[in-house]
Length: 144
Image (cartoon, rainbow, N blue to C red; front, side, top):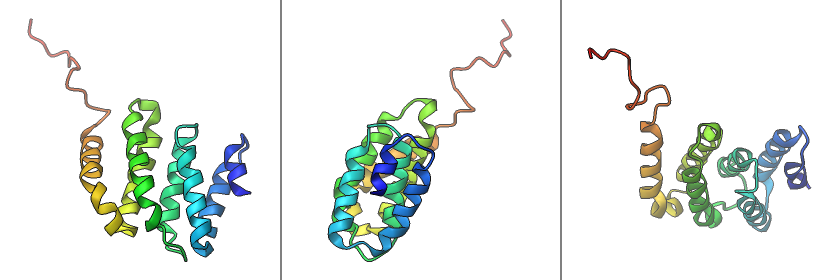
């Protein structure tokens, strides 16, 4: 039921995501699996930062389910989304992706290990980017 609030247009999206993440601590394996699958399927359909934030929150919940079973499916999807989010307007999505990937690696190190080279390359690329510095900018100090 909370996923339907996340798909809507109301202001309650973030609150519904927080509620779902909190409730995840009491999910059964089947409920967790279903929720993670539903959230991964929503990536790319709008509000990506919120959906990725929710994946990270589910990973951090540390509750009564084995999120590691779904980490293999969600890590590549989050990496793909992060790579596609190249514009400056998508900065919140990239930030949510990095935070989620960090949660995946911390909570499920064994399952995330196979994806760490890609995550590391992605993180280094994003961390090396500073929007306040552009190598191609002319600083106006030409002596021509």
